[in-house]
Image: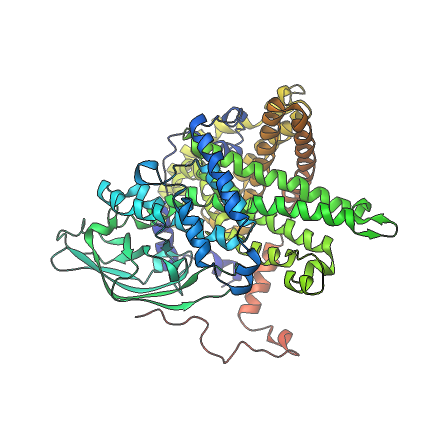
Length: 637
């Protein structure tokens, strides 16, 4: 059997994984989605322009809290957190005092009831003191107990847990296991109903439990075995979500993990041995756990774009100061073209990072649009571009960028933690869905219309007759849809004129959106049921849409700023123009790579490596990995 044939075969495990993921996915589109339209060639700027206007009272409370938070931040020593790998008790006390653990919790439950935009601005601010502070607060509020309880909890659960969380009872979210990452179908943690149906007995191990070692409350995902309905639930079983008291008998934090970055973050391995969890602590129905997790992440993912936007602004500040102070060959280094281009990239990207977050948060706060793709794109694009910004800052700083802040201070220079930023930013491409997984999730939503149109054509296991029937329906759909992609506003010279000099970029976005939709159709027509295996191709389709989304965000934000403050708005337009020029180059290159793939040769080479045929290439080095123990420790209790 050829390599291609091997990779196109479908195993029962793969089918089960797809079924579990598909069942948990939100399938309805009751509200319009701007980002979904980009992938369908339907660029509707009216969905994001003008920006939704926040409630004045909510905005006022947000501004007041941000002022208070800034005062607290100025008292926190980020270098101490980095040095001690720990957030001090006095810092935790100060954050509790001002209500930082309840920013997203409604006021009726003791929280501050801030908008998602102001919550993100708070994370942006505090993360520039030290990113572990942002990780602490976002893991607690974005994916920890407050968010799923607020969205899926009963009135009794809300009254029980939300006031505690708002007062500072730290929470954590436990999904990942030592041998289960993005494939929940293989989850081994179990929650077995007791005979009387009053409780579940929880067994298993959870890995990378951010806040886990210090949490008072946990949201735990575990598989309930199929069972008769005895009062504990519907009897259907499946992955379910539970709120668990962290001091319950049978819970052990076995290890506190350490990482290349985010020192000070509490993250560990938690084991459950026959932990009794009352049935009243289950969130939603049995089998609804993965859907709860994915829905929670729709808004939870926006914490990463907020934190990354803060890092981008901080990077710009450091790059500006250093590039004006440091002189080489008689001129400040910023005046040399090679460095100046990097400064321009950092400035334009910093503006775009903030714009992408602000737009996504505004859409979420307004509640009138379906923003699940926007949130996912914001997380994916921001994490990738933010790391590039950090890397360029280190390059601009040269040897001082590679040197630690502690070493710089010890020899009398300003303690700039540029290398720390690079280490800290790296995790964002992995946190809450790696970039590779995010591309697949977004691609699934982007091609949803095509899958519906294709019907059984998109199924590997459908019989020939069913495929033939679906082909007729697909032909009718595409006969109506494809002509809409021939021409649009992007070919009209005066289109989007209200955006002034940025109108040409929006015309480019509109044209590119239609081109992207056509290219996606061609891919669907060619690969049909095998399209989900073309991960590189799908990833590039997603990346083009992400750039188009970012361009749309900067143009609409710059125009809003120009209307509010003409002086600052003029600078915003220049930033947006520069960003769009840079983004257009990336879009053009990715479009080119859609039809110029090295996939076939890469696949064969990867298989040769995995089969061990290229072991000779590893000769000549000291291999310290083999023979030192298993790659994955057993997760069995």
